[in-house]
Length: 327
Image 1 (cartoon, rainbow, N blue to C red):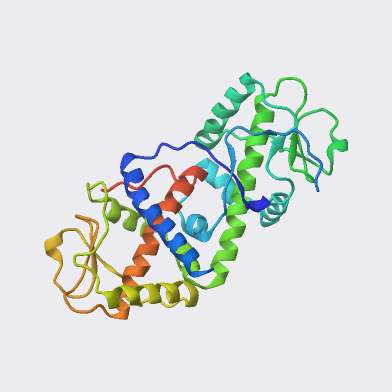
Image 2 (image 1 turned 120 degrees about the horizontal axis):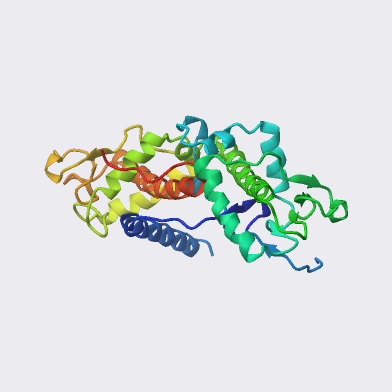
C-alpha cells in the first residue's frame, strides 16, 4: 500500500529502445532479488473524485529510484531553476500537504478542451518557462471555496475549479502546484536518504557525471542483453556473493576500490575484476575472487540498477533533458 505522500505526477516518456532492452534486464534482476528475499522470510465517507490527467500513484519514493543530490546537478532549464529556488518552508509545507487525501483530485473533471490545453501548457511550463503570475489559493476546507479561481483544500487535497471554463493562468497555477509538490516530496526524501549514511545514501550522493558514466558503460554494447561473467562463479563464490550482498545492504560494508571499466575485452589484463563495455560482462581472474573483488561487483550491480531508475525519474521530473549520449 502506498503512502499518501508518495503520489507523484507521471507523464508518458519516450524511452529509447536500447534503454528498454537494458532496463528490462536490470529490473528483472531487481525482481528476482525481491522474490529471493521473500523466500527467506517466512471508515471513510466515499465521495466522487476526478483524478488529474497524467497523475498516478507511485509505489514508493525509494532511494534507489529517486535518490540524488540536486545541488550537484547543472541547471538545465528555467523550470528546474524555479524548482531549486523554492524556499525551505514552502517545500516543507507542500510535503506536509502531500499527506492530505489519497491523491490530487478535482471537484469536477476537466472538459475535453481544458484537458488538451492542460497537456499543452505542461510542455510550455517545463520547456519554455511559461509560469503562472499567481499561485493556487490554499483553503482549509471545502466550505471556504467561493467559486472563484482555483484553490486546493488542505484537508483532502482536492483542487476546486470554477464552473466556467478555466483560463490558461488557472491551468498554469494547477500545473505549478503539482510540480512543486512533486519536487517537494523529492527534496524531502533526498534529505532523509542522505542522512542515513548507508549504502543507499552513497547511491544518492552520486554525481551526474558518475551516473552518466555507468549508464553509458552498460549501454555501450549493442547486444540486446548484457551481463554475466567471463567464467562461472564457483559454488563458494556464489555463496560468498550472497552473504556479502546482504552485509553490503544491511551493514554498509563496501570495497574502497572502484570497479575498473574497460572498453574492449582484450584490454583486460587477467588481474582483478573489471566491467567490459563491449559485451556488458564482468571480467574475472582465474583464481578465487576476494571479498574486495566481490564487493566491487556487488556495488556496480547496485549502481547499474540505481542509474537506470534515477535517469528515468529525473527525465520524468524535468530535471534532465534526455538520456546521456556518448561523445
